[in-house]
Length: 480
Image (cartoon, rainbow, N blue to C red; front, side, top):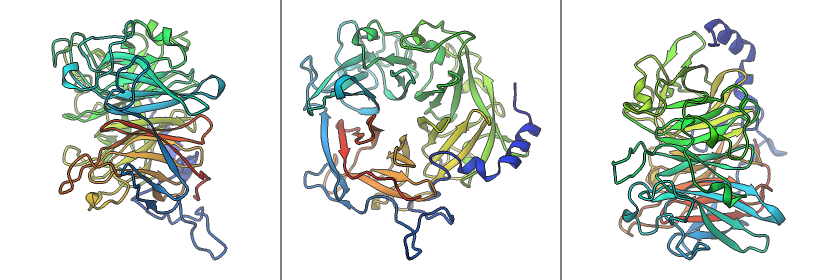
């Protein structure tokens, strides 16, 4: 049932600031390093605000990762250097990742490899492991990285023959949904099958990954990330696309369907309802693009408009909606389920968006209230090459120590940065691996940020040349 203008207005009046401030993350940063004018900020005995984070980043003699004092890192996988159990080199282009608890103290990480197009275009594609291949022409897929209690690392293929595996999401039942960020059809870019789907990868059971099948019920478009509501079973998905900008989607499962390992692949291609978000403000006015929001705490009501042709046989899904039908946003990226809802990212907005320019937003969708709330708004960074952290957010995770940890995919130096509960950001790590030249340095994006199940280790990837890192240190709850 659509959320009426009267219902939404009443809810926003009753909820007030509580909509913006509830949950683990709360109202977050409006600019890199911003200090919230908020009584909830923790202060020392002299009344001075406690500084967030862990202090300045110290340059790495090995030239890989700058961290605060007391922190250290370990390289788990490195494309072209480390090898899979089968003998091939670790594939390139590390991206979205999730960590799962295995038996006997083992941590299992499923790692996407964002390899687009033909296998011959890449030095180290995902190997075509027998029984795990969807399209033998495609270069992408996932690997599973097993980190054992004694420190040993093993890696094997979870799925192969997929394309542009960017982000995805962990399921409540302990599997990974890997998302293809492409709309290539069979015959385009050398592909033998249609692409742009979601696939399920089980890190616990290699046999469950055999004969991979796309979950067509979740649509065919330039997928970025997905989360599953553990209570209602709804799936929420982001789309990283332009011309026009992408959409936020919700998939409602069919009546009687119960989630579980391997059950998504049993669904019919038209099972359930895939719908796109349509937002409106407290006066009932339609919001055409999320770039219209210019203040944290902005709350929009959400309706959901069914997708006419989710498999996009003739027209891309986002192009099936005319003006005024749905709400768009530029570079809808990472998602994370926490606090009873979905955090999701719009990475930036410029001339391709009708609202105000920005260098990143993080929104929170509350399914119960049927609202989205702007939690993070990063102003345009005037000097991204100069090294300030906090522009172009991509993958995100909710920290067990409070707030968010965000992977930066912008210009210049690239960081992992945190956002506290009350509105301040801080650098957590800096990529020092120069893949350019001394005269024109270049630093690849961070991706795949997530914590181990016990919260002691932060995992993150440097996409090029493809490195997975494990960061440990004196973690503590950050000041608000």
